[in-house]
Image (cartoon, rainbow, N blue to C red; front, side):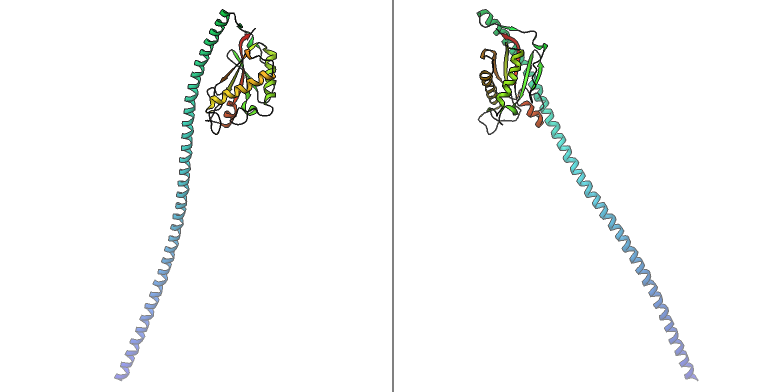
Length: 273
């Protein structure tokens, strides 16, 4: 009996131990499942945070690029502003010089007129009706305008001369002669100035040392055409080279530079008799 009782107790103990292990296995399995779920949640959260970090990094790069572009544009605008200020100072200086030159020329004309009258030479007298009408010149690129007490007939350098040269282009002599014929019809006895102008770009790769030399050479080329192909006499004409001193447009643009490269036939109020 005692042995049977011991066996029964042993069996009960084994059954209890097995039940305890089963309970522990279920607990461990539950904890493992919970841990896996937490790990999965953490992994998803990490992925979300990584996605946000990537998006923020991309936004930061785009902002950096926009900032760099903005700084570059600001630098360009500052450079343009500085160039415009320099140009304005140059134009102001040129305007002052032009006024001074005009006053000086007026004094020279008055002195020359007085001298010629005293010596009994070819008299020069002002024509007060000069500005009442403008010559009817309808030629491509040719502009006619009043300028104080003179009339300026502006002929484009691009139509007259080869680049950086005083050599006439084909058809230039015809253009000059046609413009001169209209002036001669309206003002047959006026004093005519042949005034050369250039843009502000420095001379390079040319026989001319500077823009003044080039403008004088171009004026002389037009002078030769007027003497050889028109009714103007040498006593009516004089030659001037202004270089880039008297622009009619801004040299900051290609179109402005093109306009400034010109030769003007300037009709003065004085006449020869």
